[in-house]
Amino acid sequence: MSQIPTIAAAAKALAAKTISPVELTQECLARIRVMEPELHAFVTLTEDRALSDARKAEAEIMASGPRSKMHGIPVGLKDIVDTKGILTTCQSRFLADNIPDKDATCAASLDAAGSVLMGKLTTHEFADGGPSFDLPDPPSRNPWNTAHFTAGSSSGTGAAVAAGLVLGGIGTDTGGSIRGPASLCGIAGLKPTYGLVSRAGVAPAAYSLDHIGPMCWTVEDCAIMLQSLAGHDPADPASANRPVPDYVSGIGDGVRGLRIGVVRHFHETDHPVSPATQASITDAIRIYEAAGATVVDVTLPSLQDWSACGFLISAAERLAAYEDWAMTRLDTFSARVRDRMFLGSFVTGADYLQAVRFRRELCAELAAVMRDVDILLTASNPGEAPLIDQVPRWDNLTKPNFTFPFNVAGVPALSLCGGFGPQGLPLGLQLVARPFEEAGLMRAGHAYELATDWRSQRPAMITSKEPALVSA
Amino acid sequence: MTHTDLSQKDFRSLIAQQGLTYDEAELAEFYEAYGLVRAMASRVRKPRSYMAEPVAVFAPVQTSST
Image (cartoon, rainbow over all chains, first blue to last red; front, side):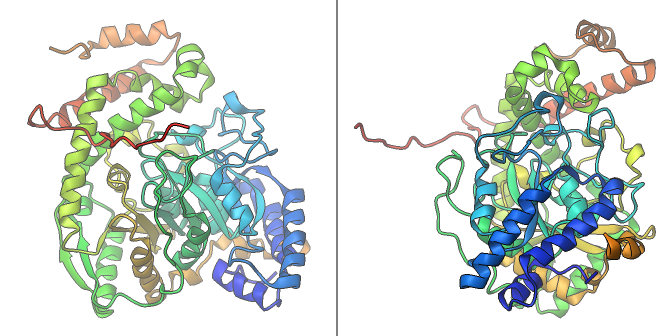
């Protein structure tokens, strides 16, 4: 069994015809057969579709070369993304038999780029709550230690990418659902600018906070995948109608001259992080300064302010989206989502509008700070992954998370692996940029990855399964 | 004036009306969570002019008739 390639490396090998899409897909399928029983990363494995896609890609590449860097690359989609003719359950009893008649725009974009669909990946129910043990499909497990949580709600995507079951995947992010699992599973996850990637055909969690984005082993891979995902879509009323820049070719240009603002109060006082995460942030500052960036401290409204605003908006919008079911069949939801829906019913119309007025003020304060810096740096999680059976029921209310501010503001935000903590589990850093400045954001993330060796370490379970992988 | 500050007894009664059952510890935790939501609702009410608009205000797009 060969080493798990990045998308960038696989794309080069596919273009050089030193590996075929079928071989790449079979390697992923072998890892799925061996590791999936412990990881539960998939709701639906589409093995026949994957092999069919791979054979088609192989023929196309042999005939005229790859049409994109995603051509022949095995990917997975969070199970709230509609897929034509393929079960799309949102991990919910309500949609246990739901087979859409149309692809979501993001699924169609990856298909058009020539990627290989491996299957539908585990999520928290309707991208909310979790981990839930009272649903037909179990929650996904963290490949670094299966007793631990992946975070969510793009839990299966985080686990599948970290374990090499797919080389990239689609996640969605309403309050941190790409960046949380990216952080706890030790991968890179990008929440793009609101409107950059179409939401059409993706089940809503909260209309004005939902973002679709790539989750991959490296930031460079996120850039490659974003290149195929970004673009205007009339089917999404919030879709931005603007040219898509080249995210990939300048990714290695470094950070010299960049101004980086550390939102120190987020991770030191608003929600103090673990000593390991604090040390990881300090190291990142040193790395960026050594690479020629200027690093300064900046101050934003408190995490508590951002969280209150984001929570009230998301609770009201989520209840509006699923109100029919919440009013008539509340008990059909998992207990965690049911309880959140019930609590959301106490958010009044005035509460919602006050939050939306506050949102304008928060966004203005962020924009003012970002006139003087190109990138913000803070944590994406307070520390290592908790045990999966010890995730507090009201975690989203008791402690403000580090990711919500950038859903509220709609600006691009990236979680990347910032090393490992005392339990050997990944730590997460978060970088943030101005709207539509994903290229610079990923350039900063890529520079950090090149300066560290975190990308050379995969979960130990992969190595421990090597004998089984050889025969799978 | 508020219509939303419920006593623990009223909150439990609403839960019971939904047919939901919890043990004592869960009920106490649930009511505490309700309190946190109300605290958030207070937090977003900053002093601001009645002219301060929400972020969701939009500009109409001209369309032509066919």
